[in-house]
Length: 115
Image 1: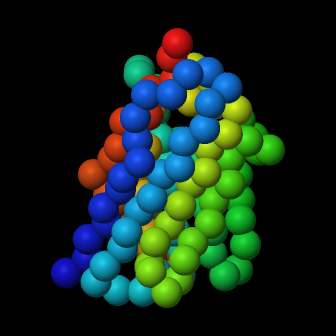
Image 2: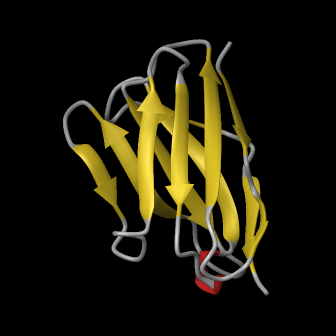
Image 3: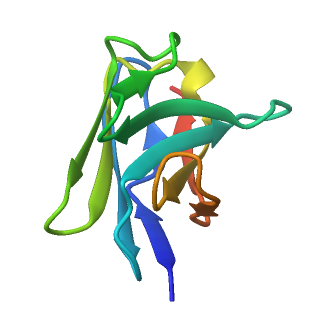
């Protein structure tokens, strides 16, 4: 049974940092990604990592966020630095067995950037 469990969300002041984790179980995923959905906005890709493309980032987070994975622990990470109020959103872990396969989603974790 596939299960994705996110953790690490919370409240952080502007300019601060936060690290999200997504622990995957059930199958091995080649492609893992973070999406987010802000208030009144559509869900959008934040960052993606796979064996074909390497890493891909949304323009809005380039230079501030870093996606990484620990294959031994089957865990995906998102290090978020220099955070802005517009980074406020529910962040979702998204995984595919291979690029283009149906995606599995985590339950989401709330990130709020506010003073």
